[in-house]
Amino acid sequence: QVQLVQSGGGLVHPGGSLRLSCAASGGTFSNYAMGWFRQAPGKEREFVAAISWSGARIHYADSVKGRFTISRDKSKNTAYLQMNSLKPEDTAVYYCASDLWGMGSRLGSTYDYWGQGTQVTVSS
Image 1 (tube, helix red, strand yellow):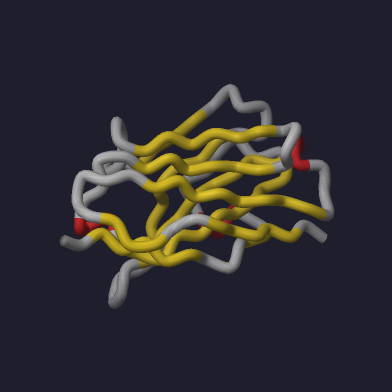
Image 2 (cartoon, one colour):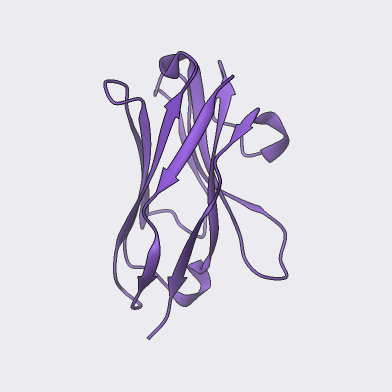
């Protein structure tokens, strides 16, 4: 069973940057697509970014394209979400998720395992 442990997040001013990490254990990390999702208070969970198991395919939500970057380090079994030019509307709980042999789906239901979530607050 795969376990995903998230770190990073916190409070940042508008225009600032944060990096989220998602460390995986219990499975072969290189066989999993990794996705990032977020959920703001009173809103449904939404897709943020995903990278396929091979790394060949990367997808972003339109709202974060050009500002966020998803990556993975197979030597560390860790996925990252680098978030730049943060806006107040990026405030949410962010979740990483894994999908065996996945192609980087935008659908949360595709993913099998989820991290515990981490709060990102963008405020002046």
